[in-house]
Every structure is written in C-alpha cells, then in structure tokens.
Length: 82
Image 1: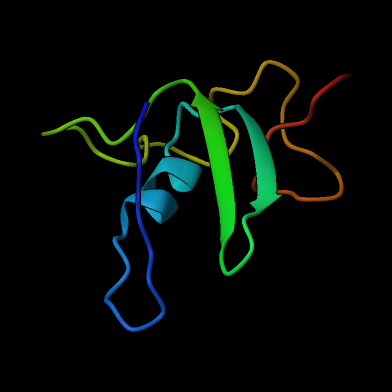
Image 2: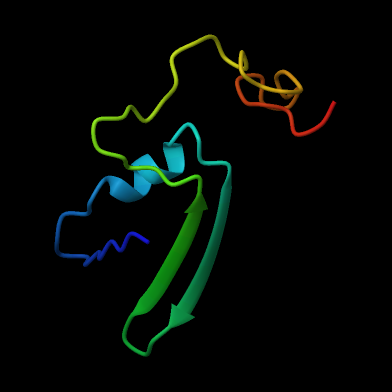
C-alpha cells in the first residue's frame, strides 16, 4: 500500500494522480475520516501502479484494448458492457 501525506503548506506528491491515471488501474475504493483538526482520505487501487520504469499509459488507439469497445458516453474510455 502506498501512503502519501499532504500538508496545505507543502508541495503535494504527484503519485496520487499517476496512480489514478495508471492505464491498468480499473477499480478504486476510498474512505474518509474526520480526525478533529485534520481529515484523512485513504484510497486503494487495483491494479497497482506507480511502478518504477513503467509508463503511466499504454500506447495505442483509444479503446483498442477494450473488450466492449468505446463507451458511448465517453468515447475515449472503455464501455463496461455491450
């Protein structure tokens, strides 16, 4: 599991974004907790990303690896069903 700490007065790490954008990530689950003076957000991803020396994206035409082709609502993303 990857932990990223963010403080409003510090620079944020780009690893949260790259994990969300990781080509093989298809599922996400998040939880949020109020801890008095701070808020904690935790997210888990499947498939794991942020792998050293691997690209965030897969090279190819949009939807070329999609089982059901492109989504009609989002034409550059995979459809979830036929």
